[in-house]
Length: 373
Image (tube, rainbow, N blue to C red):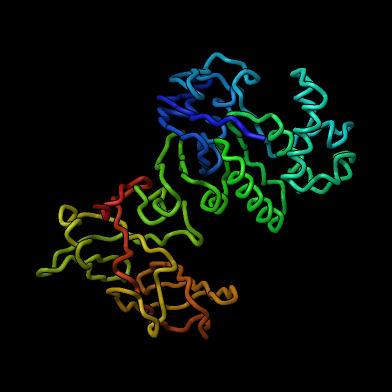
């Protein structure tokens, strides 16, 4: 069974609700045939509204949405050749699994043999063949979600739209279903747009991630590219667990060296980072350090590093890793994720910090990343 594929194009998309409340503003995005793109961001950032505009469940205030070669702004959802999967499954409780999966095809007057073939194929893909005669109340949450997926798959749409489909599942089942979704996309190659507030889902599922905040796109790129090269402080702090550490301070020139100084930290910066920051000398900046960029003194860092001393406030063992909540006498608070060490609260600890992995941002929640070439 082959599914249709189509590119999806958003051009200057905006959504304004009555009272001049702007939910989405000036979103531009091209999603390629067969690509898996994840919209991620905090609650109220505009990601679900954008998805609902693509689906036709919300009117577009500004801009143009195209699916394939067609502008779909004025098309009803049923005419857009998309299939949507919601977080609440939306199954009919009085129908069997087979009837739920077949329902949309019956409405479209498909022949009985075609319906059976499509349902059988989707059930096999999702390993729910033995559930076809059951009703939703007899299914677990994970099984219900697979039925909802199956109902979308039988449509053979140009694009799948997912609105936080795993948020009702427990942690273990969420991880398992996430892997199923990834395998399913690799087999079907159908254009997929997925909305989540869970950054781990975004990182593991998406070919590209669209990070949104306050109705605007903050950055679009491959997951690892965003993680390593965040465009601004919001993106840097949103992506990563534990979040990136931020320390406010200044860039100073001492002889030939560029030094970050703030909250008990005094870090000489190495080239090429130091050269990129010359224009910000003697200005307020924010240093960004990911927790995993700290290492014990006896471990190689793979490059230049600095030794930094902290007081240990809290120790959180995670098995082979440990999260250390640290502080400086001047009040800076940071988290380090390192290989397990024997350490207790109130101990003093010296760690290495990889200087090649530092980020320096302009002040403010959306301050730009000055470290990028």
